[in-house]
Image 1 (spheres, rainbow, N blue to C red):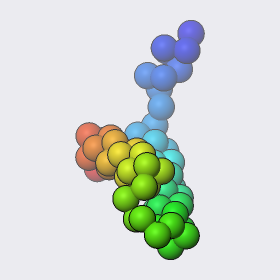
Image 2: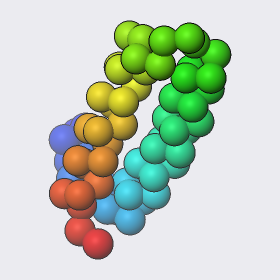
Image 3: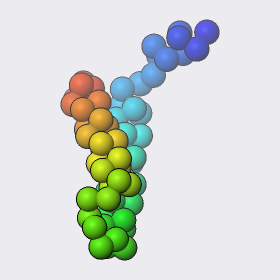
Image 4: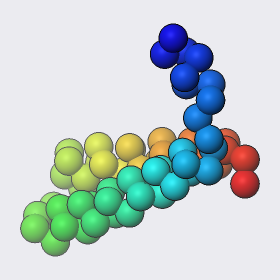
Length: 63
């Protein structure tokens, strides 16, 4: 049943949700960089990796 529901997801809604998540990640990354002396700390690297994956997913969605 969950597989059938996943196939019916509207790409427009998915794009919207991913764009919101990108905005949230950008804010957290900026905050982490301003609070840390080392801008390449592990948290920032993990967040940037997540951001890259979301960007990749967005590029695969139909416009």
